Length: 144
Image 1: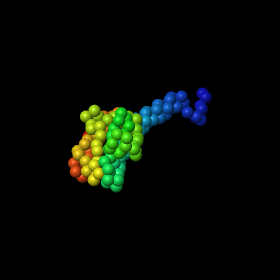
Image 2 (image 1 turned 60 degrees about the vertical axis):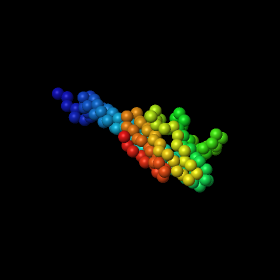
Image 3 (image 1 turned 30 degrees about the horizontal axis):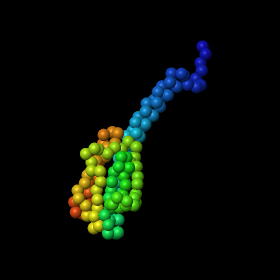
Image 4 (image 1 turned 60 degrees about the horizontal axis):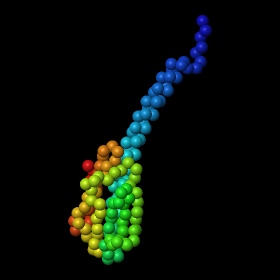
């Protein structure tokens, strides 16, 4: 009989390749979920910062500023027809704004605003609501 104890059999190689394929599939699906959650969290922080920028500019320059969502863009601009745009950014891919959200919020020359709410969702259905509070203009991020 011929005895070859050096090397691996075909069955052993196929088993190792199958195990590697399963592990890779698990890591890819976990990575996609983490990326979508990160994109939602990142977007909520960017929107909060843009709202705070509008409020701070309104206080510093003693004029009204507006945070506005137009399509997939959000902007901070002076609150009149030909006002200069201070900030313009796109929403990240996979993040959508809910139709029930406000389209804009205006901060008066003292940084005071009315209540407004912006709701965003990612591909996984997770969402976040960003609210500006009456009077103070304080911004809250609420996971939904």
